[in-house]
Amino acid sequence: MPLAHITQSGNIFLPRSWREELGIEADSKVLIEKKSNTIIIMPLKQMSLEEEFREIDEEIKRKKITFTREEAIRDDFYE
Image 1: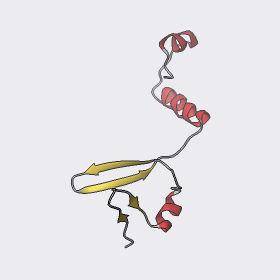
Image 2: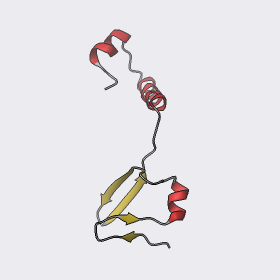
Image 3: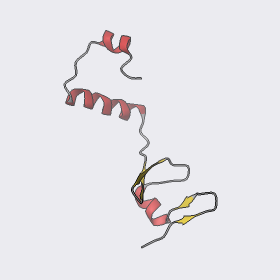
């Protein structure tokens, strides 16, 4: 099992094979979660605005939420 290295300043170095497999590049953002005595690091997928809005639209359809264009603009659903 590969080991990660932690510097004195708290930076974590992950094995290159893991970074490549997960698509984690330099300056990538990751989500970090602590569960009991375990730390979970998950890559944060970078999405275009089109992809993000598509996901929002799919969620709206899935939940069968209906509103008019005017309501969306007035209530600022996308912010």
